[in-house]
Length: 122
Length: 108
Image (cartoon, rainbow over all chains, first blue to last red; front, side, top):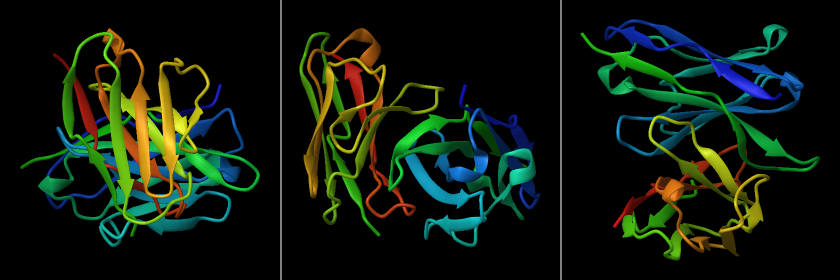
């Protein structure tokens, strides 16, 4: 079964650092991009960025460039989303997702992680 | 960056109603559009990709249409389990992606 399993909920203070994870299984981890999506409480979905674990090619939404770092460790089939200094406004649910791809293009995110809730509060 | 505008942002409907949600792109995106359903506390679920292709396992009452800048998600006969929020997403500029703002479908 193809699945993405994310790390558990986190409660942090402003200014702290954090790295959350997304482990892929049931498929060739290095052959598919993995994206990250933010959902603030009561709000819509926001695409943050995406990484290709095969060569670590990473692209960011302009809204998140410089605010977070996306990385991957292909030896353990895991992608990461990290912050160096959290803010209260980073409080949100974060999802990782894998796209449905043919040999020539990708079409949608068909596999989603269960989400990681990050709460930042003093 | 490509912007996606969904309308309406919310709607109230009854079981059995035909429901239509619109997604407009700020520039042409061919047919590179997906639709998702999200229920409270759950990850989004893919319904439609390539504007009109039904994801495996999704009921046939869901359909998508459109190309270029204007797209539609239609639920032909709303069921109780369809009350949720729906999002469009463009894949034309993959791997740079965008979501629409969402449409909440509520019970009338």
